[in-house]
Length: 396
Ligand code: MN
Image (cartoon, rainbow, N blue to C red; front, side):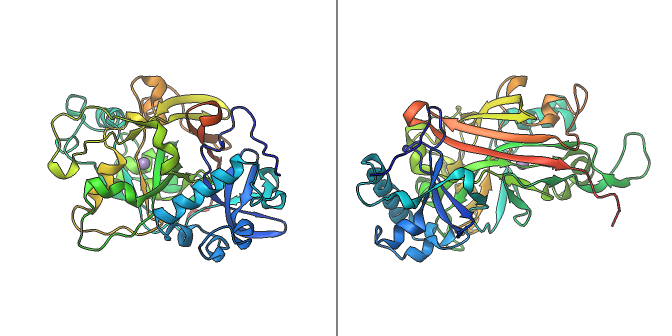
């Protein structure tokens, strides 16, 4: 018999069971599942013969090999664990398989291959277009016809708790006639949710929109730190570059798509109607409450359902030209702003580009939170947190 420690309001109920990578003083980095205040050591459990696949997929510092077993296998393993835990371990899960989360270090859970960032919130795209371009034509003509995105940088994606150094970069100050190089003065966060690809697609073969969910392993919170002054000067005409690539923070637990099934909702109506390859008949959005705090003060409350473009549409569009995806690739939503200033997912929008408030200061801690449901059906993401460190003072 095992005793589960799942307090009221816990993100990690038996309805959730997200995957991560953890280590302790005597356990090397390996796969685990968050269960209330504990972590289920999946490697230790698998070595008892609990599953019908090689236990070594859990004895790795990343989840890629496990994810690559296919959704059919990973999903069955999760359902089995859920059943055992509901029966006090059922003689399969034993006390020595549980590790207090407080004693563990959490690691980046996947080896991320390629990372793509979308721009899928109509509120965010409108707010930014209004400030950076033309208030009368805030949305560019393509925006309602395709999920706009760009290829980001995977090497600088870090797990929650990692400090983020203020980047140095080139900026053009107002009324100046030449740029300067130095620490960004407009450091920002972006509230996003990203999904991890769980199945390889073939080069040259688009993934039909009806099949896209087979390719989505799970989701986590994603803070796409941004230097607005660097971004504004560099982004024309090829898009985001060094103003984005210095760091992004992810929450340590990947919530499997299956756990979010009860929270599936229809997205906003799309007008004009999208092209056939982007059309879906089933609801493809998820009702996930999102919140951002800076030094424990709430600055934003939004919801994943506010996105105009769904994950299905993002993936169908991404592969529509024949570009393949691989296990461990990351597709991020773009800033998720909702209607109203309380729901703006970046300081760029909250402060109206610095007119009504400050960007991030050194020492500020930004934390993203997310969850769906309540009580014993709550499916939470934990948090993605990071503290801003002062810039290097020596210029390269
Ligand atoms: Mn972004």
